Length: 356
Image 1 (cartoon, rainbow, N blue to C red):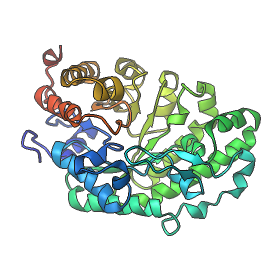
Image 2: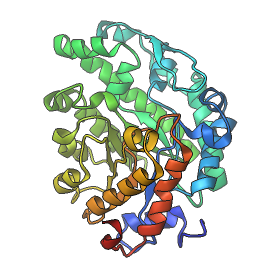
Image 3: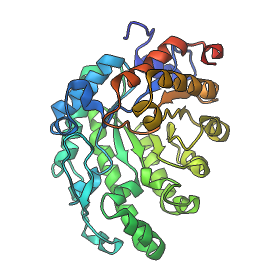
Image 4: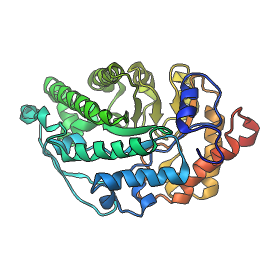
């Protein structure tokens, strides 16, 4: 337990989800792409082995005692397991440079057996990393793994521009691809949660920035709902994040029965609270670029207070968080300031006068 806290993270989150009093506002930081910095590792070094992947998360937790470690299975994991190839940058997230398929017409080339621990070294690496973290700190803090949503998984298998085109021109084949991606995501969830970690669904390609709300409802919602139901059948819940614009699909996202709702800076916390705050806990969205990457410590402190003021009275609860995965070069002192500010002014019972 951190010296300024009165509870462990697990105690805090249990109280949060069950309507009991807790010591301070929870803070979920999604230390993912930049996690290596806490252990003196580049991104390539961090992703090179399970020991480093775990060491980065444990070092970040040792420094901040935030409410959740997040193992970086990542958005391209299903694609690379099935034959897509990525580049290998020293200190950035890998990007797909060669796709497994080029059209939804090639979906029959894909094989679900690729998404099994015995056939997928990257899945095995992240399972082992999660296992290390759960063994070392799982009694006091939750450990999670990112899971790519169906549309984002599809975009790791084929170029996104062709995917979006084929969804319009070849909807039946597009649904077949999304069926594969949903089954693949289930396989990842089934395998990696045996470590004791929980899943967190991230589907940035499903953003209203790229597709309409009606397209989301046709091509994304049914499969996302199925994944949430699958996770519930395993005795767990799963958070849900979509990047970019999402105001018009917030209700649909919550209808999937997600455990928590996370969103980007294009969604205002007050709007989310008004629209869905009575149905699901919401995660605030501190701007990872303008505030955390490019801003000052004072900028961060002010935005944390602003987020608390907007979200503290959300009926199902509010968690201070970030708008997306933090860039690799985010100053660590800015991230420190999030949790430090919450410890200073986010103690329970809340005093909104401290945030103005």
